Length: 223
Image (cartoon, rainbow, N blue to C red; front, side):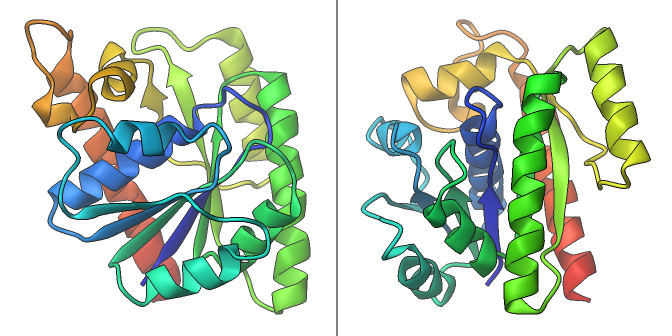
């Protein structure tokens, strides 16, 4: 089943949040999801220890650069989707996971620093594609964007991506309090308390649109 890696060597790009949103939306849609938590911070494993994790989500965190290929292969044989949250560095583990991926999602904030981190991932994808002698489909997802205003730096990064011919998700991940609250309270967006977290439905709609576009991209490359 599809292996989807989330990669950006720059910390704070929204990688783990985007991976968790994809995983929980897929699970709520009825899919079985394995999340390989290869980030040393183990944010997703900590989320999983809180109440409310969907039964359809399984988290695997005991991975190393020596074992990640075998772990991905094992989980892909069992789950309908495998989500790999990679560490924030351009390491051998990241390269190995990218080489095993059916699709690589590159979360970027609208800044030149994030864009440089994304460029490193693109180089890794190109090198792993050469080694595997196949195309590794990928796309950038813009994260922590404003729901109301597109900043000057975001417009600049978007323009640079378009000029370079790099695929970009139409759905950007908007900055929402609900996304932060997932890591504090656990569970899914639909399980959050509307009295304590604002704009939950808008967060759900945004996450659902992203997950839907991700599935559509995977189906497109599979076809």
